[in-house]
Image (tube, rainbow, N blue to C red; front, side, top):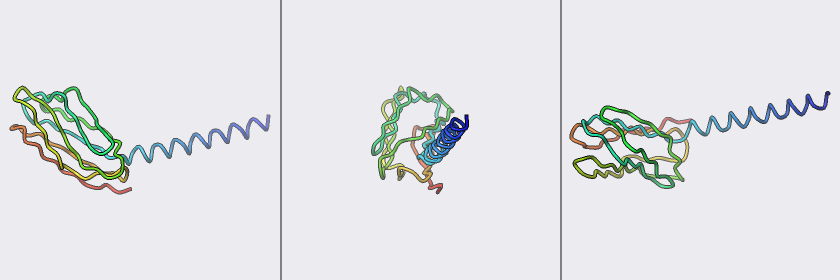
Length: 123
């Protein structure tokens, strides 16, 4: 009985350490938020950078979405999307790294112009 208690305690400790490790590194992945302030639905939305390509089927007018991205090393940030008016593509939006709490907020305005504010949130 005592042997099982030590084994159970060891397993519980390992699970707790693994969970804390994953939570810490998951929370420090770069996060990209997109806000669509236009009257257009954004279709086939793609976020691109070194080691990642994240897609959204659509982002509706006045909708905001966020996604953690799995950057490989250092990366720039690019967005691509289509509307009924055509394709929009904008690169060199932000600098991101694998971890460290980088945050980028992309805004699409009423004229479909793309802007981005980004900052390093630290550990």
